[in-house]
Image (cartoon, rainbow, N blue to C red; front, side, top):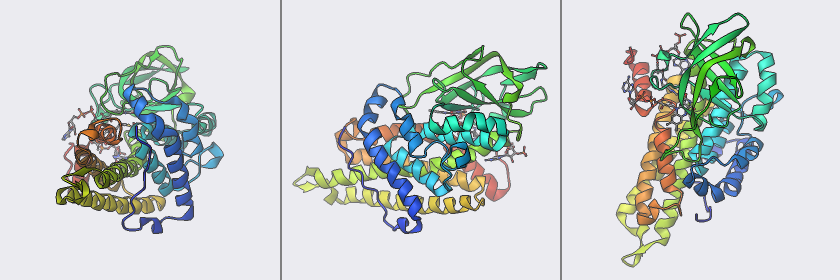
Length: 392
Ligand code: TGC
Ligand code: FAD
């Protein structure tokens, strides 16, 4: 792969809206990605393997629990810093950002928000340091966009719960030490359970043959009469709103992350357009190539402003779920379109692993599907503005 020459676009001086702390956090993440991710990521994606050696580094840049309080090992940062870290990591690779998103927003967040003090003390410091990796089991083979229909269930057996069911498409599953699992009790109410690797009847087979997110490990969670200790139930929130609350935090991070992938594609294509000569001119001098590049920077700039504003609302606890859906949907769609156009600017070279664009493009096919598909987020906006529910 070519050396990482990334220079971040900032056409509207959005940097002026950031604090010194935001910029420091972002620079640390950017430098780390250049040093530790860019040189190895193409290789790991090609061999469909997660690079476990970067876990400590992810912890050091604050990617595991950026906004979790420091007393639990988190970085104690605000929501904009959290977003900027996700942006920089996804600039390197969406699969690596996935690992950080799941760890922070789908595992640490529910333990912090819905767990008791003993659970927080037991799990959060280990997850923040990367000593333990977690995963989040919501999706099932027959229940993806409609998680409320889940059939995974547990029964109260007096001194323990007995858990049965299957979760599918679970990021980090093949090597996670702990899974936050959403399952129905005997009345049909959804609860979160902490299931640890090694519990009898719990297996995590890996999902192979993915053309997307290849540097992220995906798997199933299979529960065959797993005895879960009663103290492993998250006591402070139940119902579908509990997992959906975690998704709000992860979707917010993805909105920022997608900007990173788009910036990398744009920056690569811009540089290439000034170097590649055809018909005696740099291809960047042709109007059709300029149109592509001008539209890319316009869309990136709009996404930067939308997402910064969402971060301000989130810091004030005023961001709604529907606002987060809009940003996730817009920014991932923006990034996937830019990846496709940038790939064309590189001609044949665009399909090779010499450049990052094709990998981003394939990764974004997962990003536009997980954490709520493109169409589901459109319907969430539709419900919010009309008051009419397309899901019922
Ligand atoms: P609905 O009746 O609308 O809602 C049920 C309850 O949940 C509440 N609620 C929310 N709460 C917090 N945050 C949100 N975003 C919420 N949305 C809804 C709602 O108020 C209600 O509460 P209550 O107290 O009245 O019971 O639910 P529904 O069954 O009609 O479904 C709505 C729908 C389709 C929008 C929702 O289920 C949905 O978002 N579906 C998409 C599923 C999804 O996103 N799955 C993601 C799986 S995890 C993943 O992909 C990780 S990838 C990670 C990586 O690798 O980076
Ligand atoms: P389906 O729900 O079957 O949807 C298929 C199509 O139908 C989509 O286009 C969808 O938009 C459309 N559709 C569905 N319902 C409607 C409707 N009402 N109106 C209009 N169109 C509709 N899940 C986890 O729980 N944890 C994870 O860590 C995790 N990681 C993932 C990693 C990867 C790489 C991938 C690909 C997925 C991951 N997922 C995870 C699962 C992901 O959240 C689901 O794939 C996603 O929610 C969509 O569900 P589905 O694949 O079953 O598609």
